[in-house]
Length: 254
Image 1 (cartoon, rainbow, N blue to C red):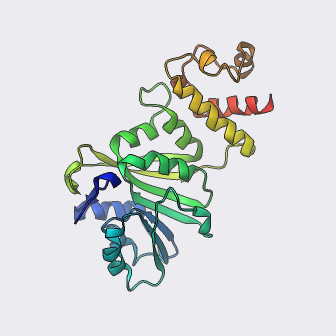
Image 2: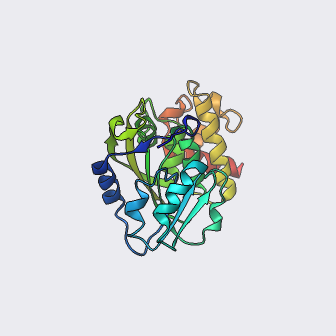
């Protein structure tokens, strides 16, 4: 089993953990599953015979032969050799459930990509525990940041369980965790509001130690904070997801 450090690959090899993952995903026959980075097919084997359709997106050409052997008897399973960050999800015209053991080095980029795709039923990702803890963090916590706000604007987030580093090959230096994301109702008035939200969240957290009257001075004057009923001396981590949505709605109207 070859892994490539540049792809951030760690294959799961513990059968009990695989069973627990599949149980939590709880696949049913009518499901259409997109698996990102199936690797050696550890989860694929157990999902493929439980669902109607499956798409596997695997970037590493060295893994394709083994994956093709697994899916050989399943005509409803398609293997695509591509990078998920370059793949156009709009090519899939069905509502999908997304699963994956994500490479640590691009996991946040993949999550941001999922935010802008509107045909998702739910997402189950295995991620670095520290990334999961950042996703589920709430305001005033030290690890609450751009990733928390962006993900929670689009999804209900729930950490399901932690995963020991000992169940992977090669053993990573960090613990992992399994998370479920369920899309929320679209919270934005329109695309412009959504784009302004992206910019404001990015600017607020890039000046994380600054008060928001400084970090957001490009968008808001002091009286604007009064209108919004938000303390201008707050820092980025003191604002809730709804505060960011309100600020971006206000800025969009200016």
